[in-house]
Length: 308
Image (cartoon, rainbow, N blue to C red; front, side, top):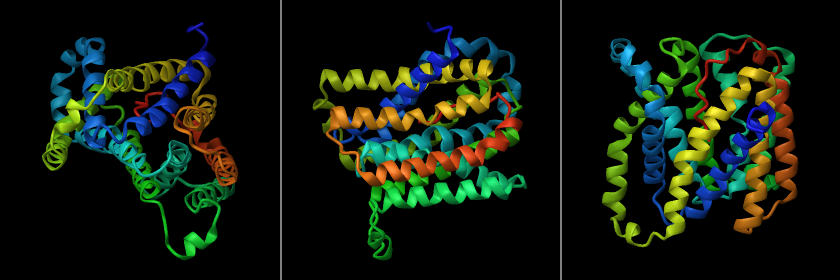
């Protein structure tokens, strides 16, 4: 069954969807920055043996490009995920995952600005449609909230997350050939862990360490899930499937993250799916399909899918 690329894509997006729902479930018990830090520390421990020989052979090249790994780690690995876990403290898993689905459009916009890529009329229309969808979700289907500038803090933090993801992708597009995929993945994790450590120390200095004594077996199992399934398995499954079916088809499956996050949020977190979610989500997904339709043909498969 795991030889079927479409099964792998479904499992990868299921694990990523679970990251939003489970992140929401433990958000009041584990500090968000610490949660992200523990997750990626686990990922490094589990994944390092698979890339060790490759890293040893390229150690001089890696040392010479350490700034690239720091930027990738601080933006797309640690920064993005820290914002996700901070976001779900204030908003629902449904909202966070829906806003996250706007990320491909942000990448296209950043590519236009920083890489001078041209946009077609279809892409411009797609960007506009997706943007309307995001605004509709943030406003909960009520335009008066926009006029009154009353936004949910978690939704705005999620927007910052996808801006960081956009920066990550631009750097990856420009510098992604400095090393093989696994090495870039590990190097980004290490760079992120080193340079975000002061934030984690400060968070626990402010909050104290009493939260540790209150953790249950369920919390520890959740931490294990974060470090293995949405991080390692999703990364391996998605990339393996993408090599077989191509980036275009694989990117369409990424929309299932919203579906799985919504289902899990409704079943286990008592979240409610409202009409604003359905309409806004449909607009975002339609816009993403229109926006990425052209650029996916040019996209390479040498990507580190560390999102979600």
